[in-house]
Figure 1 (spheres, rainbow, N blue to C red):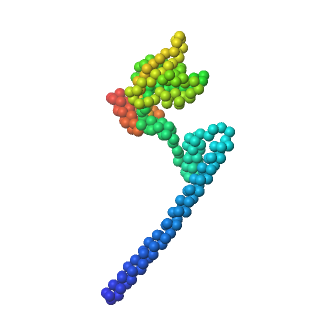
Figure 2: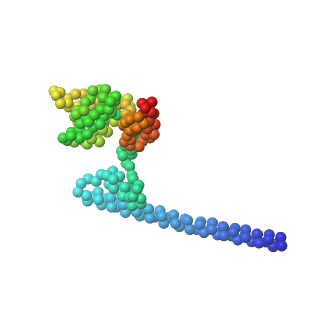
Figure 3: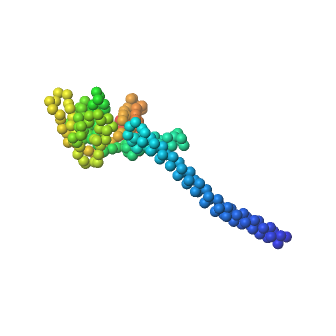
Length: 234
């Protein structure tokens, strides 16, 4: 009886071993054939894309921007066809995203916006380099480091104002009532972007806290605001 059991166990192990060996041989024979086919499909698709891009470049009415065609067209289109919830960020967009996530950036510390085809100062943030330099709300930014801002967008001017901490940027502004342009040499610094921009006590036991966005610093800001309101309540 014991011998019969040993023979049965040996037979089972032998059969499993044979199937395992056949699986290995089959995988080795099939895998190399599948990879070239996949690579071939990729090469064919890439070739078609380059042919289409070349045709567009040769026949489009205006010069084709590769960044616009690829970053704004091809790559987002590919991601959307695979997953509508995926997004692509070019280097500039990713840099802005990281600024928002970190809750800080390096610049002069003011909000700018468009008005009558000009870029004006909406407001400098209290305590920032722009504020300390004496830049006022309503000032028209005429030039940055000698580069005229005519026909520039708000984003373009904001990019010129940003830069490494400790570097100097020269800002030329036009101010109502001033006889000539005003020059400011502003040293860039770290500018915080607060996500908790407002908090106060409404009445004992009831407080108001406004979260404008979610960043890496939001948790700390909320805790600090709650602590301050608790101190005021006490």
